[in-house]
Length: 425
Image (cartoon, rainbow, N blue to C red; front, top):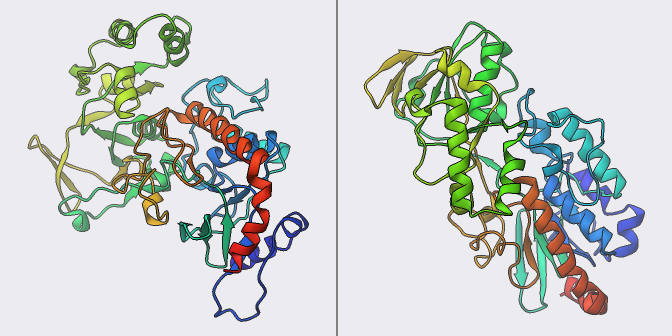
């Protein structure tokens, strides 16, 4: 796999823009490569958006991607029935809308097709199979050193685009090793086909957990849902329009708390009291909770009706596991054939980025909240960590491109010789 990255270093575009050290001895330090423009780590939607915005500003960028394709999370770690939860106009990347014939809520396949077209349209060619082992600012020469197993790349700018969903969160439960059935994370779940006529416990009640439960129902499984915390469930549509779009419009005219009160009132009328179903709402409203803590409300696509009729059972937190039994904190004990963990993801930035200024070591997210978390020191940037989905990504990608372009046009090219000196130091 490393051979692929090695070949990339010799394609005409890269060869004309870089100076590389030469050695045939594999035991020598990684070859150093000078990159005139920014290095983008990650070829997901955020990395592609940043690269496209930079190209639109006349700034070339190199994208390093650990997988062998763009958007590997979408390609390999999502379930088959996945659709965008928001209308497509709120999910398109900068400078290229979705095709008009795409549905309002594009499927996984639609979105991947769009990303492939996006990369082709802007001639974005990531270096694949290039896992970044470390990225560190060298104060002596004033440049970033980004190391993979094969090469060390040197640049004035680094854009972190690995996202909030880089690594699965897998909770530990007492007796986990004793459970006889499979325990899988949603990153490994494709469909409910292999769970037909089986009792399946889904742990986690976000949008993914709710949708996996619905998918299991469609394949004649018997799903149950563990609700570990309070949450807001909203209808996907209100008054014939998307709830999200309506919220965005109302926020132009009203304070966030007034909009929250309106959303909760309409939700109560349309959906009833969710607390009677074991789904208790937080004290803060859905938009305020999202703004402060980044916790996304669930947009119901049909799961709530299954819960209301008892097709999907609701349980509190798990106390312990044993054989095929699960004991819950309320004392109930029930038998299950399998457990699916819809427990989300986290950032992996602290494992490779040698910087504690922009990103927190605790959660791998920018220390400053949106809209201020996109820029650090010494040419370090972050895109895709806003907890505001692709809409937040578009805002940050545009800001980053404008900021780097102003430096590129004033002094970036003048530092080319300094970069050449740096890679030989």
